[in-house]
Image (cartoon, rainbow, N blue to C red; front, side):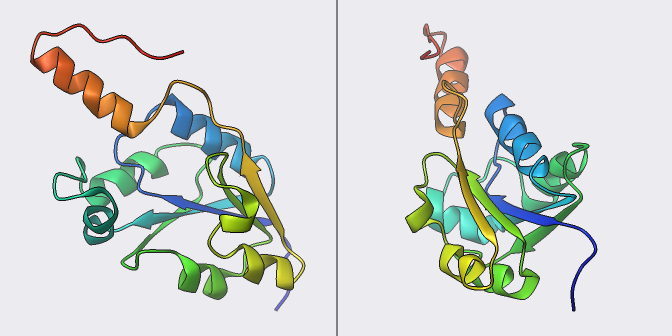
Length: 149
């Protein structure tokens, strides 16, 4: 059934929300009328990132994402990838950050097959959850830390 709006989808762990995430989400939303964010469940994040992650649980992460004006809906998924979710939602636009080349974006072949678009958007330099965690650990240990720019 055809939609009367352009649906954009992106996904990730969004463990510690930072300016790079916000930028990516705002630019993703600008590519369409509604933005759905696929959010890795706590179990999925542990599988991908290790036993000390996530920092915030899935409900906390979802609440923070939903507080952003650019995010219309958050869907938590348990699988390692959002492939099934993408097949179910059939977004008009699929977006990931520039650290993912288009040919490696999960769901890209599916979206392109039915005429959708796939975008790998450049990231804002100097922001990552891993570097943010390292910064917080350095601060808690009283050691100097400098953001890479």
